[in-house]
Image (cartoon, rainbow, N blue to C red; front, top):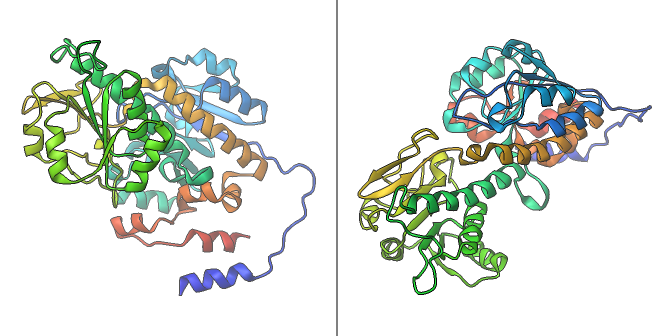
Length: 400
């Protein structure tokens, strides 16, 4: 019934106001310092801030917000930002940008009709937090859901590329004498390379495979989707070993691996745990597991969330690295990646008059919205928290 209403409404003629002069509107952006989840990134670099200020933006940044990415307060002030000393001052802005998800303390600082542009990290959200944002008529856009050209998810793709590359350099470190047996990932003449097994042929898996191959490692990739495996081989230009996720074949190969990277995409918000504890028990002593999927539960039955301060633990003689938000550990590179995506979106929003206006015309950005003026617009989030769902397309149609 809802689909029929939407279809019929789309056929109606809509009045369009003629443009008079320049419709560009200056946007007021606030960037608080991240305090949770060991988040070290910042969503806009000084270069992007300077470009946006020159475009007419007003940008307020909390003192030391960029320090963990090695951007100083002075750099932001020179770029034209106002550096303030309290979160309360930052949250006076109309639009809040965050590199980490909004937390409970920040919810209380939000004011009515504000816009939040940040990751959502759904497992860390609570029903009460979402209800509070609904009551304040917040419009919220999640990095994870924003869609770009050619069906890609630009925020997720850039962070996944970083995570895949970082996973291999991390594995190389833990294979070395510093923690493990002293194995060189790529081997040398007369000594075979280490065996790297990657579970998942998405962006993380592809970046990890490229990085491992570049270092000379022997690479295997497992996935439950033949198309992704075929595309990966084509993109790599290398006929590496690939396989569907068959438990028997998985168990046989995992016992021979020196490194296993968990890079599966979540299904219904949770990553399938395809590697059993018995499989881990069969692995070589001092081999390494890097569970990139730990943000959504992890691929291994033995995975337990760790952090950047204490990133590893050993179970069944296997070193486990299970740090969520891996990209934050190379925060300067990750901040540039976020900034390169965000700055053009913000310029387009200014040209449209506001971010809410841009949502009406930018289908990819619209995919990222999970709250619109207090209405919850993602059905799976509404189901998760037993809250009312409202279709975003109908809301936007009513706004014309």
